[in-house]
Length: 120
Image (cartoon, rainbow, N blue to C red):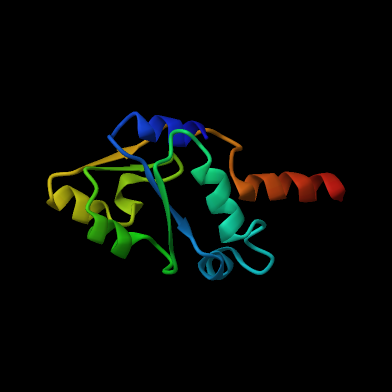
């Protein structure tokens, strides 16, 4: 939520792109996602800072970002600027790419690792 609130302050509208269930499974493995796209989208859309939620089926949102051409592209601190899908499209059209500060321990993967470590 903190990332989304910070991202909203950097632009006029906040559009959040979510991987669909099939792409999450491809990227993260069987048993993922823990929550369906519909459930994830409903929770994200309920946040006051979020204007729109869109889904994509590719492994990265690059095609979506290049089509939408946002003025500002924001990612969490677990990304390096040269690893951000769609960053080149945004910069080539005069947009800005911003990486927010990293907040340790706020990911589904780290939550799963904590739960699994505690159950052994």
